[in-house]
Amino acid sequence: MENFISIFWDSTFMKVNAIVSIVAIWFIAERAYVLFYKYQVNSKQFMMDVENLVKQGNISQAINHCSTSTAPLATVVKSGLTKAPQGPMAVSMGLDEATLEVAPKVQKRVGSLWGIANIATLVGLIGTIIGLIVSFSGLSVATPEQRATLLGQGIAEALYNTALGLTIAVTCIIAHSFLSGLAKDVMSDIDYYSSRLENLLMAHAKGTMK
Image 1: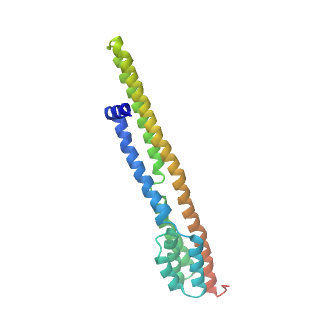
Image 2: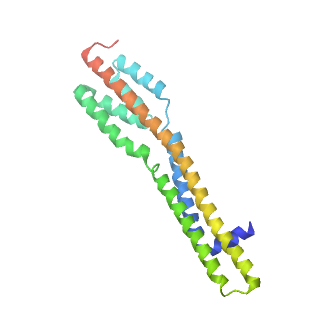
Image 3: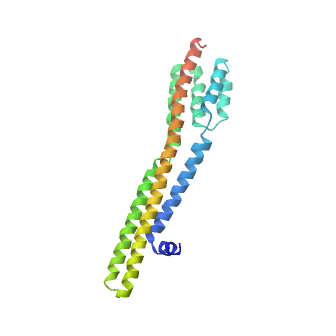
């Protein structure tokens, strides 16, 4: 551990990757909080409540119900309900507009994790190459006793740079897979339930709702 700390303070690229890792951790933590907590809602139960209120003719109450949630689904559904008095076309446009508005918020920063993974890998690779260059360039002027030490330090710095870069990259890739799955689930619920709401409001407008 002492060897790692010593090499870390001497290696510029390990320090750069330390900063990259902080950014990655912040991105992952922020997106995990938003997608796993802030944007989560029991979609099935939420839409059952909304549909029951619409069937009872309480569209204003359904709008108020949507206002109690910060989930993107609630935002999209509220937009469709608000446009209900203006007819089916307005409802469809309202749902589409709200979906386009919330989609970037749901997917925000998730794709950036791939970029961070690539940056960490490349920074680690540069650190590896620099460590080897410094190590081997010093051998020509070192005494036989110093060569083994220089070579060992250079290889250690190279391997630590590689290990740190790959660790950050793998963490980002795993987090990206998890967070992108959550984002896709949120958007899938929005697409499905906005279509159901559109059909429900159309039936309500025609008076054919069961």
